[in-house]
Amino acid sequence: EEKTAYILICAVRECVTNAVRYAEATELYAEFSENETEASVTVTNNGIPPEGEIVEGGGLSSLRARVERAGGEMHIQAFPKFKLSVSVSKGKEGML
Image 1: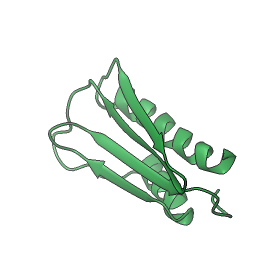
Image 2 (image 1 turned 120 degrees about the horizontal axis):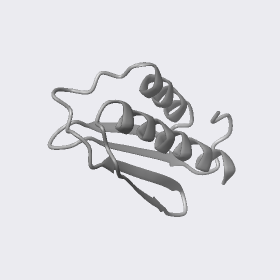
Image 3 (image 1 turned 90 degrees about the vertical axis):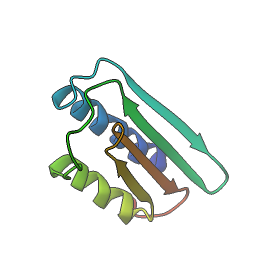
Image 4 (image 1 turned 60 degrees about the vertical axis):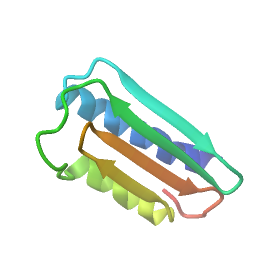
């Protein structure tokens, strides 16, 4: 579904930006999955691990708001390496 896919692509785009900007990553790994009711993406990279907990700035905060507006969930892991997981219910209206 187009709206669901858009949110997942926004998550990957934000991770690409942050991986280059903060982690000096050269590779990004995105694993997409879906079932009948939900679609998700988990993103990691080969960059420098965060030195502490992730503080959500403008990009991650905006992404979280978009995901939660769609009735989805977003989880960030800092250790042992950065990982972002986003899941969104399919077919929800008003997601953007």
